[in-house]
Image (cartoon, rainbow, N blue to C red; front, side, top):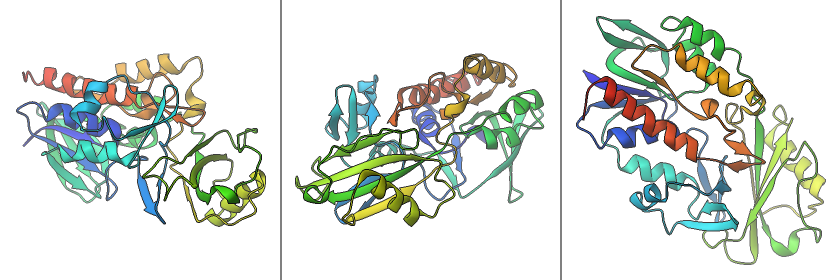
Length: 317
């Protein structure tokens, strides 16, 4: 028997688990992929460390959390109010995950959430049925809509309206002498942002540069075509030492952030049964990305607040 089930092992879900970890409560996190972190992932190749999404990050207000996680010194500055993690943004995911002792069900998809005899039921796509006193759904709208269809049909209808403006993130590793002399900067809607660093640990040494370029409307192209397209656009004639393309279809719900967004999120949450929380980047009240700059604060706050709401619902101190 589980007290709380957290559906989704991205940043918000892990933040919820981290808060639950501080209390005498049994929780399980369910993740559909074989790794935690959602769109946040880092990879190393040829002495470069690149990020799949969050690369440049807006300063995190909860500096105490970073200290708790041992990440105070694992940062470098991009610009005032912007930083990156020296070991990749996955450092934050790994630091949270190391401190969790709750059960994990990996590569498991949730098909639906229901209610029975005062408990919530969680039906997995492999036919397994779990139960919980409270549920935290930390999943994108297109998946949460399906899970909540039977339990909260009105909320499900609202979630079905979500649309995305997903952007491919193209990472390059170059020797500085091989880059064009003109400064590489975004100047079109197709390439809305560029970030670059020669921070030690991220590159082989100070003679190298790691870049991340946002590329919109390229999702249907194969990665090698996207890489070539970006190189041509910026006048990069030499082949990069390292290059990769990452795309997470639900990482940029930018087109939802219109004048009605805050009211829509409030309406969705108001239609959920007590004991159910809905968290994640889709439900931030401010866009989780702005010009490629990742804003992690609200996702962290959502997770911890959802955990506290579950504890209150279950009357756990």
